[in-house]
Amino acid sequence: MKISYHGHAIVKIKTDGKEILIDPFITGNPLTDLQVEREAPDVIVLTHGHGDHLGDTVELAKKKNALVIAINELAEYLGRKGLKTHGINIGGSYRFDFGTVKLTQAFHSNSIVEEDGTIVYLGMPAGVLLTIEGKTIYHAGDTALFSDMKLIGERHPIDLAFLPIGDNFTMGPEDAAYAAKLLNAKTVVPIHYNTFPVIQQDPEAFVAKLEGGNGKVLKPGDEIEL
Image (cartoon, rainbow, N blue to C red):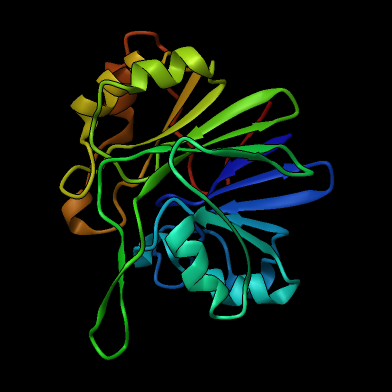
């Protein structure tokens, strides 16, 4: 299994002939190396519906009728746009042909602003646990630090964790470093930073804060094999 990072919160997983994209914010993302016209995922997993995470989901999903997995309200919203979706709620999991997806809590918000300015509530934001090929990947989504991260790590030993460090909209480097300690993941990768001026951070400085020495900074396009 190959896992790659592509700027902001985009993660790509290649497993058993399938390609999974998490939070495919490509158009308007100054840090990504991806191009919408070149991507055709089999599965899209969303942590929440903000534009910098929902991103190009609709266009990408329609290419080959990709399955979109998200919190139930967001899944229903996208289903009404003609996408094939599977809704899960916090704490729930489902075994798909590529592996198991479980949603965890995330402390954030979750909505979308329609073209007419209407704000649509899309359910709770989420983190995502993916168990694939016997390995567990945790994408925290956008979240503040919360103590139950310790419980998540104990219940689901994590091989690879993607944690936001940008501050302002999510936890910052100090809280993210404490989150890494609670989760006790084998490898921790910082995400959700430097895309916009308000979330400028030094990922190398974050990695240096980790007590376990288990941090790894990935540039867009860099890959880890599990």
